[in-house]
Image (tube, rainbow, N blue to C red; front, side, top):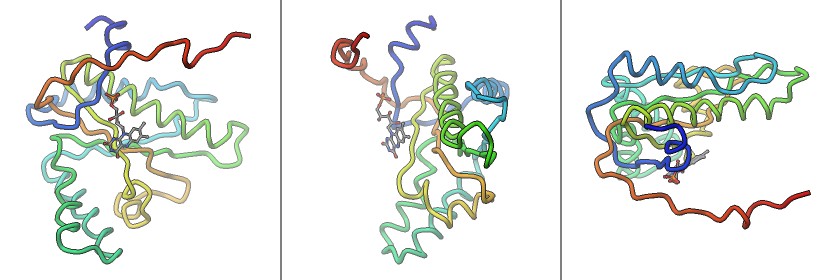
Length: 182
Ligand SMILES: Cc1cc2nc3c(=O)[nH]c(=O)nc-3n(C[C@H](O)[C@H](O)[C@H](O)COP(=O)(O)O)c2cc1C
C-alpha cells in the first residue's frame, strides 16, 4: 500500500476475525509502535499482547472489573467476551517518567502515537484494526489485572485482525474547515 494512500484512507475496522498477523508480522507491527515520536527518548510505553488464551485472560479481567461494579449477568458476559472481537488485542500502556522536564502529557501522547502507528502498520499489511478504550480502560481493577505500576495508565486496546467486511471509504473533511493561517 502506498504511504499516502495509507495516510489518507486509513479506516478502523470494528469487526475483525482470523487470520491474525503471524508472529513475524506482529513483531513488525510492534516495531512500528516503537517508532512513535518520543521527546527525550524516554520510551514512555509498553505493550501487552493478548492472543488465544491471553484473550480469555483479558476477558476474565474485564469480568472481574464489572463484577466489582455490581454489573448484571448480561453485562458481565458482554464484558468477558469483548476481547474476542479480534484475534489479537494489544493493551497499550503509557509508562511515564514523573517529575521530568518532558511533561507527562507529552509522554502519554507518545504512547497514543504508538497505537496509531501500530494500527497503520497492520493496515499496511492488509489487516485491520480499531483503537478502543471505554470505561474499562480507566478502571483500577483492569489496571491491577494487567499489572500496571503507579506511573502507568492505559491509553487503549488495539484490536487487530482481518476485516470481516471491507470498510467504506472515509468521509473527506475539508481542510478549510479546520485550518487557519497566520
Ligand atoms: C483514544 C480513542 C479511544 C477510542 N475508543 C473507542 C471505543 O472504545 N469504541 C469505539 O467503537 N471506538 C473508539 N474509538 C474510535 C475508533 O478507534 C475509530 O477511530 C472510529 O470508529 C472512527 O473510525 P475511523 O478511524 O475509520 O475514522 C476511539 C478512538 C480513540 C482515538
